[in-house]
Length: 218
Image (cartoon, rainbow, N blue to C red; front, top):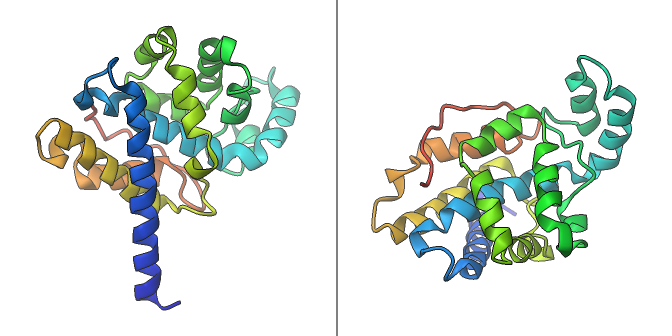
């Protein structure tokens, strides 16, 4: 496959994935206004990307955590176990979250709290934690997680590079910004999006947290 064909194929995959994620927002109809959908779908996209990237080394991370959880400094061991500069020490993934709908809110919060501090810092920028109870109380949290857990929602690095994820995120921001009847760059500039997705959502060698992105949907 030549470079031009490869680029076209990547573009198709990116558009298809962005459209699939965009369609998940239909679940929010009634509870949120269309211009508010991004408050849920954008952080959930990031969380699912992290989930899929870390899934292959999840067992090793949990085994390592049991050995080092009482250490004063344990970050290095957990990063080595995960293979990245991020990790999650909770027992949950999207797969077993959907296996217990009755406790979905508590389990999902534990899942998010299990991420390394750099990931939690990123998620705090979205103020997503205040939306979780609202979703759960309206029986939507489980439905959203269930949709993101479907096979077609997979976002692992073997299928989507960090650059791909940057463009997927950019396309989602464009769609949500249209709900505001504003320019796509009103809340995230294109450069911000690429930095966010490449620096935060796993480069193929390592992860670096860049908290210079100060804009978010509100």
